[in-house]
Image (cartoon, rainbow, N blue to C red):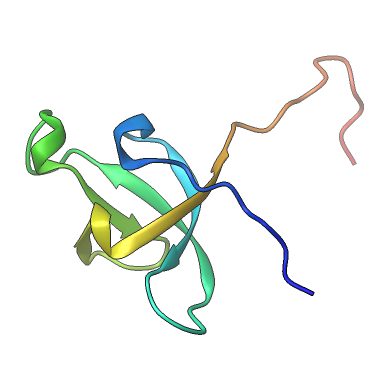
Length: 80
């Protein structure tokens, strides 16, 4: 039984945000990637870089699954 997953369209991506991504192709692993503006602020220059790598890829090389938001912290929560 397969599951239906709604992908994020490239036109809906935001710069400098993190996403769960999967390289296009069969049996690709799911990884974390960041939309980078290192080559320019205009959308046509955006790339994606995966965590642990400095290699930039074209956005169209990946499926964008879910945006990863910042962690939520409770200000008065004890640490440790």
